[in-house]
Image (cartoon, rainbow over all chains, first blue to last red; front, side):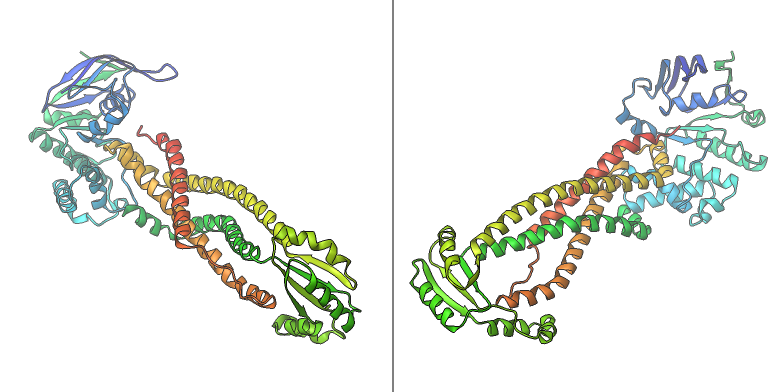
Length: 217
Length: 289
C-alpha cells in the first residue's frame, strides 16, 4: 500500500532529511516511526500526502507515484488519507461540529448524511457532547481528539499521525493511542510518528526507527 | 450560501467596499447621464432652426415695426415672433429665484427681441446672419444652429472624456476588487490551508472568491445607480425651473432598464476579473507545509 524505494529528500541549503530510505507497508498494518527529533519522521510522513515531493527515489501510495503526481490529482490522493499533524490546524472561528464537517463539504454528501457521519466520528472520539463548543475551549487532549475525528470522518484507508501525543498527559496520550488501535482493528492502515518509546511497548507493533534520515536495521 | 454569509458577517467592511466602487462608478455614470440627456436636447433643437435677434436698448416702436416688416419680407423666414422687454421680465419674475433679483432692479435691463423660425436648414440660417446683423438697432444675433453645433461638438468631446474616465475607473474597479479579495484570502488563510490538506480541489476553494468579486461588482453598480438617481432627482428641481424660463418642461431622464442591466453585467464581469487575478496571484502562496 505504501512503499518507499531509495527515497532521498533534501531541502534547499543542502540539509538532507532522508537518505536512501526503502521500506513498504502493507494494507492494514500498524506501524510506528520512531527516532530522535530531526531524524526525519515528519518528512517521511509529509511525503505520503504529497505535501513534500521526494528529491529522488520512488514513493508509491496505493499505486500512485507521489513524485510524478500532477497537481490536480493531489486533492483526490489526500481524500483517502487521514492526517493528524503536529500543528493541528483547527479552525477557531467555528464550532467543533463544523470543524468535523469540513472534509464532508467536498465529497458531495447530502447535508443530513454528512451531519450523521460527523456526529458518528465525534461520538467515536467521545466529543459528541461538546459539538457546539468552540475548539478553543477544549483541552489539549480534546483538541487532539477533534483532529482525529476530522481525520476519520471520511473513512480513509490510511491514517497518518505526527506526534499525536506530544503535548498530552499520559492518560490522554493513552486514550489517543487506544483510539488509533481501534481504527487499526477495523482495517485502517495506521502510521504514527513519535519519539515517545513508552507508548509503543504497550502495543508491540512494527517499528521503523529513523536515525539521521536513514532506517536502522 | 457561504459567500453571502461571509459578506453579511463582515457587513461593515463589505459596505465600505461597495461604497468605494459605487462612488467611483457614479462619476462616469453621471457623465453618461448628462450626455444622454444633452443628446435628446440637441436632437429636439436641430428640428427647428431658430435665430434670436436682440435689439439695442434704445430701440423704439418705430424701429421695431421697421425691423418686423423687413424680417417678414426675408426669404427663408417662416415665422417672426416679437418678445417685448416687459414680457421677458415678466417671464423671469415667474421664477422664484429671480423674483427677488428682479424686484431689486431699478429698471428693466432686458432688451426687446425677435425670434425667427427659418424654413430652410441650419446652414441657410447661417447665410442669413450677416444680413440680420446689418439691420439697424440690432445689437446681437444669436444663431441657434451655431449654438447647436457648438453643443454637438461639446457633447462629442464630453463623450470622449467620459470614455477615458470610464476606462480608468474600470481599472480602478478591478484593482479595488483585487485588493478586497486579497484581504479576504488572507483572512481565510487557515481555512484554505486546512481545506487543501484534507483534499479540497483548487476549483472548490476558488469558487467563493469569484462569487465575491461578482457580487461586489454588482452591488457597487447598484450603489452607483442609486447615487446618480439621487443626484439627478435633486438637480432636476433647479433644472426644471431653468427650463420653464425657456418655455419648456425639460428635466433629466434616468437610464432605461436595458442600460442599467448592461451596466450591472459589465461591473459584475469586472468584479469577477479582479477576483480571478487576485486568486491566481495569492491562492498558490497558501500551501500546507
